[in-house]
Amino acid sequence: MTLSLADAPAFLRLMKHYVLDYTNRNDQSQTPAIMEAGYLLRMGDHFVRGRDTEYHAATAKQMEQFPNLCLTVHEIATSGERLVMRFSEHGRSRLHGDRGCAWGGIGLYAWNGSRLVSNHVEQDYLARKRQLRTGVPDLVDHPALSPWNTVAEAPDAGAEAVVKAWLDTGALADTPGVLLDDQWTGIPASPLVAQSHVEINDFFSCGKAVAFHLTQHGGLIPDADVAGEAGMPVRLHMAGLVHVGDGRVKRGRIIRNRLELARSLGRA
Image (cartoon, rainbow, N blue to C red; front, side, top):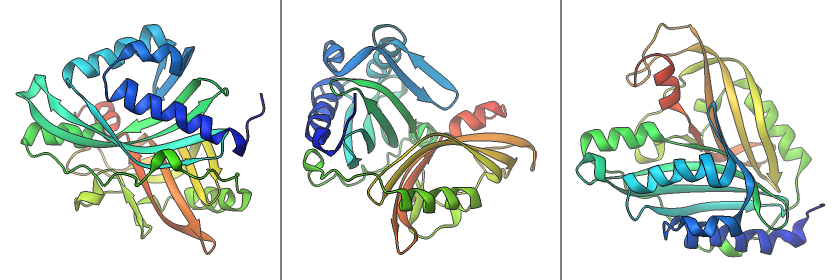
């Protein structure tokens, strides 16, 4: 099925159902109307396959830990065929004395014209871990003004070329206007990887907004949260949504799977 800008309103209605009726009501009975049975979620190295099996079990565990879990949408871009959503999840963990936390995420969604078929996503679980440890929650980032009225834009090959060239430079942590992980709260961001190359897992544009899910390869640059031998070969997964203007990446957000990297090095 060929999808286009004309399909964007239906895609946005589906995502509104996903956010308001499924996630924010913590109601898994809604998923058959939202996702195909073979729904696939990828986060880091983990592939969660099957709406009613692996995905149901994973989300039930999350909702059990965070009763009345909430999702706030910060930004949406869509071409009608694809959709990227930047969001935060937030709540209180019953496993940590009801301590509160809010953590960012970026998801790259694909659908077939009626239901979701996949999502390449990353969430900032290292920031969540910090908040649950300290008992000091981050503020929830500001919500999108009217996400369900987002105007669809066709893919832009020029914007895609700019972003691919930028990704190849490895300058993700050194681009003014591009914030990583919880950096928007005022916490400095470490590069973590001296990049040798990137492996693109998913990539698309909606006008000048470009979304990507990738694996960054290179040598470790350790910091206080991710400890290991400097220069040792590592992989770091991330999802991003950036905006192109004047022939360059001008602003955006990236969520890196720092927790998975830390665990792979034996430091969680």
